[in-house]
Structure formats: structure tokens, C-alpha cells
Figure 1 (cartoon, one colour):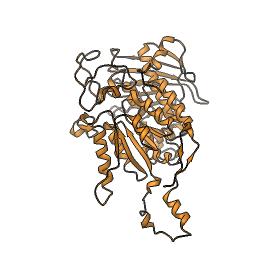
Figure 2 (cartoon, rainbow, N blue to C red):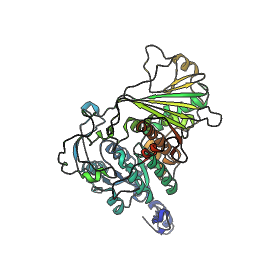
Figure 3 (cartoon, helix red, strand yellow):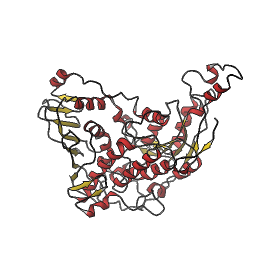
Figure 4 (cartoon, rainbow, N blue to C red):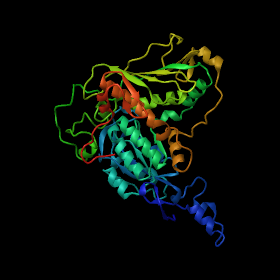
Length: 476
């Protein structure tokens, strides 16, 4: 690799990489033609052309993401980071063995990365992945091109901002942030940095997501005036008490509790907060609306070309100042957009559901996203009843199909088109709106919203829920 220093974004030096292939080509006239097998053969990516990646947050989802990125020859994972060295009890996506049956942390992540790369070496050995407890030390010591963030929600924004300020490409699990304010700040930082970004709402890249857009744009159900979205009960453990646990057990060996808290308010360690039940707690998670809203509402936003809502209100089962409720209903009102009419979007979670659509067959289950138009109903990605779908067939294709959610970001990092859920064009606003539902829930009243100015206009006190003061030593 040949490198030079030039001027840069964010006052950071930018490495200009000259690929091995380009260097060899330039020297070919003076030497000889180099056979392809010397460069590694078909599908080989020279080390100087690889996207170097660090994984920050290596619990159940973080390990899944790293395993996926390791399958791309264009990517080289060189560092991992987690505040926990190693322990069990993490979510395993192989639920046949029980949900909380995975060992995770920075050391399991390092071993996973090195074991996978060792498979590609004749020696069967590989030692090239560093492990860190503090993402700030990683970013200061390891010159990576990109980061993957899969920490609890409350740490997303501070890590993403640190990476963006250094000109790194960022893949961040959903939601993009813990607060509405953070989402706006990260979006603007990504716009300024001009790097590749992607939110971890994998379904946005699916064939079904594109079919929904194309059917609605084709007029299959006419003008859409209402959308109903529901989510089943949470799949993580629910506290068996009200408020915070009273016990203060010792912090497990290998866990840096102060780093785990990050910008969140100080409190004693308890196993009720980690490794993955943190989603229950207002200080750390964003509930089902934050967790699954960015998944389920992504296609709704794209298909209906939604922007900022004008109002939001929410109600729930019993509220607790510490814990997200068992069930929530949130209603967002969106204004007309050009020739598209106003839309009411209603979110249900915790097992609460909207009424069954009038045209749904009696023996058919109800999908979790329902579009109500003036000429019909679209449930999931199919018209109802099914006889109408069969008569309609397929819409004209208007959207290119995705190369895959993760590959979209890898390609964007390497100069390709922006990923489908990049922060600037899609997922920053999507996160803002999802988290705005939580603001209305905590304010316990209908809020009128000035999206461009990030302000509740009818209740000044509600604006305090848009962000919070960080602990000393933490900042965006």
C-alpha cells in the first residue's frame, strides 16, 4: 500500500490508498506482466483495497453482524470493542437452544473473528484482531475505515459521533440514538462528514419492501390515508417488580460498569440491566417503539414519502417512571405531501392490535403493517382479500433490487451509491419520529410538533424529553 497525507474532512488527515493492482499495473512496462494467480486469483481482494472495520458492541447482535461482514472479501475486521470481557446470558438468535444462551463480549468476538480468518490460511492460524474495552481508545489507536456499532441504545450517539468526527463510515444498530436530539445531531454530522452510513433495520433491503412501494405508487389501493402497525409483546424478560431493583450486587468480573453506563445517569449495577434486558429501562433503551419501530416503519416512510409529523399522542398500560410500559399505542399525524393526502399512522405494541381489516378473510391471520387506501387495503405486501391480489398480479418494477442490507453499506463505503437506510436520506428522520412517540408517551398529552426546528410548540415542558444531560465526562 502506498499512502500520502492530504487535507481532510474534520481536520483529520485522510489516507489516499493506491491499490496493489494499480501499482503493479504502473510498473508493468518496466517489469513483466504479472499472472493473476500471483495477485490471488478471481475474487481475491488485495489487502490495500480492503475496508478495515472495527466492531463496537459485541453482544448477541454485534457478533451476528461481525460474522456477516466477515463473509465479504472486501472487508477486514481488525479490532473489536466491548465493555464486557466475556460472559454468558446474551441473546442467541438460535432460539432452539433457548434465547439467553450465548456467550459474548470482546474476547469471544476476537476469537470469532480470528477463527474465521484462520480458515483462509494454510497454517490454520490468524492473529490480527485487537480487543478493547473503551471505544475511545480503539479510535485513537487503530486507523480503521469504518465502525459497526451494536451497543445498547443509550451509547449509540456518542460512539457514532466520535466515529463521524474522525471521518469513519458508520453502521449502527437501530434506533440510531436514544433521544430525538441525538438523532438530529448524528444526521447532520453524517451529512457534513460525507461518509457511508447504514442503520441496522435489515428488512428495508427486502424484495417485499420494494413491492409495497411499487404497489402503492401504482395506485393499487388508491390514495393512502391511514396506516396501522402493530408489534407483539417484547421477547426479552420483563421485570417482576416496579421501579429499580433494591439489591446492589457486585459488578461481575470483566465488566466495566462505568463504561457500560456511558452518558446515562449513574446507578448501581444489577443484572436486571444487562446483558440484554436494558431495553426495558428508560435510561438505557427505547422500548418496543425504538427497537422495532425503525424496522416496521421504514417501508411506510418510503412508500408514502413521509416527512415530519405535525402531531403525536400516545397512551399505554400502567406507566412507570423507570420502565417502558407493557403495551403502547401512539398516533402520528402527517400532513399532505404534494398530491399525497394527509396520513394517520397508528402504532400498537405489547400485543395490542388494531381492528381486523374489513376485507380480511375470516380464517387468515393479520400481518403487522396495514395500509388503508380509498380503493382498497394492503396488508404486509399483499392486497386483501387474496382474490384481489391474484387479479392484480405484480406492479411495474420501479426500484432497483438490493444487493443485500449489509452489502449496500460495504459497497457505499467503497464508493458505491448510498445505502438504503443511510442516516441522511432516511434513518435519521425515521429514528426521530419513532422516538418522538416516546416523548409523547412520557409527556402524557397530544403534542404539536415543529420538526424542522425540533420543538414541541404546545407544551414547553415536553421539550425536556427530547434529550437529557449527560454524565460528566461524556459529550456529543
